[in-house]
Length: 337
Ligand code: NDP
Image (cartoon, rainbow, N blue to C red; front, side, top):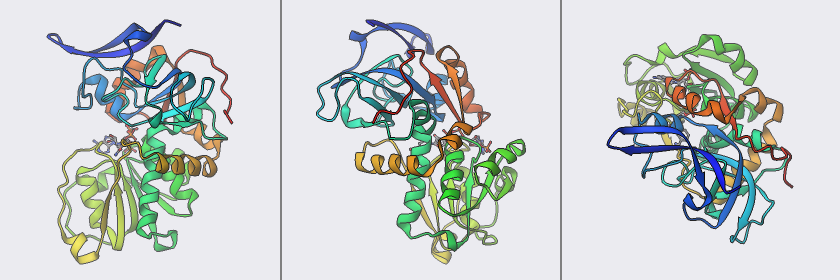
């Protein structure tokens, strides 16, 4: 296949523009591994990239898509050979390097892992950056020393991609989980993932006192802004919040009181840098912990033709769980190893 389809973002005299294009292999950026991309997924960041609502893209033109899974067709990297089924997530894909919204990718093998056993490519994309980030949050809380017997765990933006995985992973690790959501209609979905209670987003939306009633031992925050400030104010002595997202704002209108009067810890989590050992550990744990049926329940598979419109709508916060893109290559779905 010398020609392939992609979504490309251009920025020029006519402003920011994203559309489907046909490209050639020689148009790809440099890298030591070539991949036929079978599946990708839509992340919040991809929504920001295609709409131009956030400063995500660091060079133009750009192929968005921070996640991809596919089959290696050429490799000069010692860890991979043609035929390997691989997964890439984060590492600058869709931001600084052409990403997964294309039927072909050329990238550094240092950013790839082999498809984790037990998962299909579509399931690995249902996990993708969202699931990895949720797993990194849980691991950060564990490194802090938090244990399920400490009390209740909160997850904000619970019905979103990162939030859904955070609910499921915390519940599987033995935590009682309070899911904070703006969508009461998703209560049953969140309970099926393992939430033991549902809290309305509005309870976290208004400015509150610096120290409030202590509800939560830990939390995973995907929203930022006032939601994070209120979460910190409701965290118990020596508790910890893993903050990874800004779906509700980049500001942190918080007070020092939770930190210096209750010893609350704010743990920052980012999933972009390669740190391959941490990634492999996170993928292993996700594959061992989460039932593939549960992963399927969190995701919807759409054709590549629908991807641009759905990516545009992700920034409205209306998407439940994960959207996986079938790139239309019809590679065998199986697990690789
Ligand atoms: P999604 O769009 O899937 O989910 C975001 C969720 O946040 C929504 O479903 C909604 O949940 C809630 N939400 C949306 N808008 C608002 C608002 N204005 N106020 C309060 N809540 C809101 O996104 P992802 O799960 O993919 O990503 C979540 C966040 O995490 C994003 O900010 C993303 O950029 C960030 N992220 C960060 C990473 C990192 O490396 N640090 C990696 C991956 C993601 P509900 O309907 O349940 O209320």
